[in-house]
Length: 393
Image 1 (cartoon, rainbow, N blue to C red):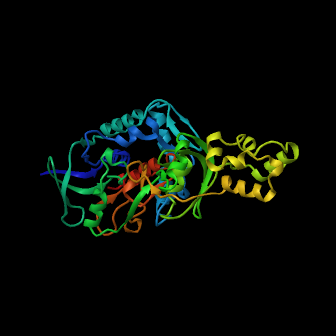
Image 2 (spheres, helix red, strand yellow; image 1 turned 180 degrees about the vertical axis):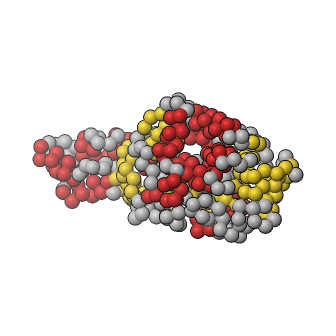
C-alpha cells in the first residue's frame, strides 16, 4: 500500500491550490482526479480567459445557509493575495467590468501557473484515477481503493466540486463522501443559470433570441443591474444568471428593461412637444424594434401620444419597467456555472475546512455550501478555502 501525508481528490481550482499550499508546508501530497486533464473548468471559464477573481470580493457576495462561514477563509487569503501570485508569473490581465479580472490571453495561463506551483512543491498528480472506496481507521488514518491501487493517508481533502456542467465530468462524489461519514448535505440546485420560458410564452418571445438589453432583475432577496439576453429557451445574461441563484420555484422575477429612466415622464414630455408622434416612435428610441413589437400590439403602437391617457402611459411603462417574468424553471446543471447547496458549513471548521466529527477529513471549494456571485467570486472561494485547508491538512 502506498502511504502519503495528504490525498486530495479533485484537480480543479480548489484541489490544485490546496495541493500547492500543503506542499509548501512540507507535506507529501497526492492529487487524484478521474478526468484525463486537470483544471478543465479553469480552461473553459470566462469565455476561455478565466475570470480568476474579483477585486470587490467580500462575504456579502456569497450565498450559504451559514453566511458567516466564508469570512475567515476569505479574510486570510484575499483576492489581492491571488493577484500577487498572478503578477509574480507575469500573466497579463485586465478588469472587464465590476471588478472582474480576466487574463489578457487565455485561461491556460492560470492553469499552467498552478501546475508549475504544484510541481515546484513536489505534488504528485495522478489523472484517470477513480476512487471506489474510502475507509477511516480512527483519527487521521484513511485508506482509499482506486483504479490504480490502494493508498493510505493522514489527511483526506475532498475538492470534487458540484454538479454543474456534467459534460466536464461533474459528479455527486463529494456529497456521497460527506453522507458516508454522517455529515449533513444541503439539497443542491443549479445556480448562475439561464431561466426558461413557460410553454405559453415560447412562441411570443421566440423572435427576440439574440437581443441583449441592459436591465435590473430583482426579487425580494436580491437585485442586479447588468445585461440580459433573450434566447430561444428563455432569458440569460449576467443579470439573469445572478438573480437565478436567489430564485425560488414558481416565483416571479421583476425586470426593469429601462433602468434609470422615468418612462412616464418621457411619454408626457413627448406628448407636450410632439403630440402627433406615435407610441412606437418613442419606445423605439429606447428599446430594439423587435422588443417593442413583441410586448405591444400594433394598434396601440401606431396610436399618437395625443390620444393616450396618462393612466395608459403608466400601464405601458409598467409593462417595460416592472415586467413580471415567471420562469418555467432553469436550464439546470447542463449550463449552470455553479451548484447551490452542498456540504453543511456547520459541520466544518471555518478556519481549516476540517469536518468537526471526522479528524483529518476536509471539504473545500464548490462542494461546500458556499456559492459566489457571477464575476470571479467562486474562483476566489476556491483559492481561499483551499489555502485555509492546505496550511493545516
